[in-house]
Length: 469
Ligand code: AMP
Ligand code: MG
Image (cartoon, rainbow, N blue to C red):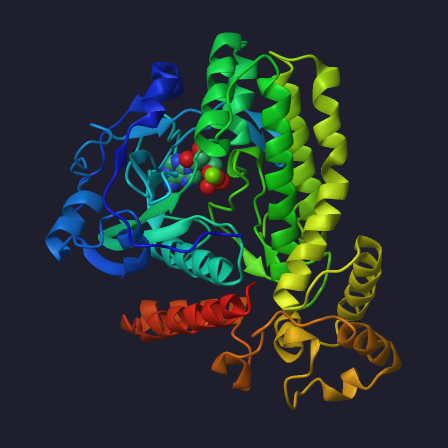
């Protein structure tokens, strides 16, 4: 279950330096003429002991990148490769971001502060190293919504408007610019391993495997480190795939450089939530083949895992690695049961019974008669919540059958206690809402829609958690 922010004292770290110079390049942040704070994540700032920074201190560290005491002396652009839409690209790497600082939370868990839109690096290629304000707003909204739905995700930590005019071919230009800082456990991607395999750097691969076992899974290194790490990543990745499905989320660009070794969701570009349980629903306009469509995300994540296994054959026999890959479908299935039951607020029983129920539920939702958010809102705790526009559909035979099954399950205690469940409409984050929020910002510099939405999303998150989900 994703962790909640707990106030903690400031604990700087420099763990990444143990990897050595072959993994990153020290870089300079861009200088910005303007810095208008648009979003500050106070709860997570407190969780890493930075909640006390005043406005000037915040800008000093998260726009000018004055080093935070005791952590990295200079930002590091991380090196990685990856498959983009199944084509290998050895020219990736942090092209508009860097690792700024590492910290530990109250449990000693390593956390990275990374950036997006902080300037050019050796990996920028033809890019400007910048992020559009709309891109930043969209990343904040995606990460907040996913966190509220219980998905393990990067946290948007800071969003600052930087006053530049950007040229983009997928947004009306000139476009407003922004600088995002995100907080997440790891920025090590599957593409980080792929790069070492590409360069045939076995020693560095061993170093990376040991680092990931130690820092992200609290395990010792050893002869069998690579297959053990792969098994852990497979488990985390299966939970990520399941979480996306249960949330109705379509990431949009599940390239191997956008999948972390911890299975945390991050890097939100052309994401969308699907209104209906529609396997073909696609987020990115450039994904014409639907490679990363809603229903194909588990397969995409599995495919990335296979690339990790291939990379690890540099230091481990292939036969030791296949088991973790083969377990993925079963891991995904059980993770999906857990994620869907958590969203419904009902208790799991025996795997077979729960799986049959899940199949029925997917069939019902797959009819696209009721929107996903509406369904989970109406049936919290497995009991009907009140009147719903979907009532005529709920009277159908197939739905009546599902209701009987649902009623036989125990509700998670307090699942529907929060007053959120008494509202008329579920909180959602559909594309038309996101566009409307952006239009108000763009047309009138009116941020109230953005702020109200975040408050509503957080309230839904509270309601979801109060039932133990
Ligand atoms: P993404 O699809 O956002 O994961 O990015 C793929 C690659 O393109 C990464 O290496 C990014 O750092 C790089 N990139 C994306 N946008 C820009 C930009 N505006 N400037 C420089 N590099 C970029
Ligand atoms: Mg990326």
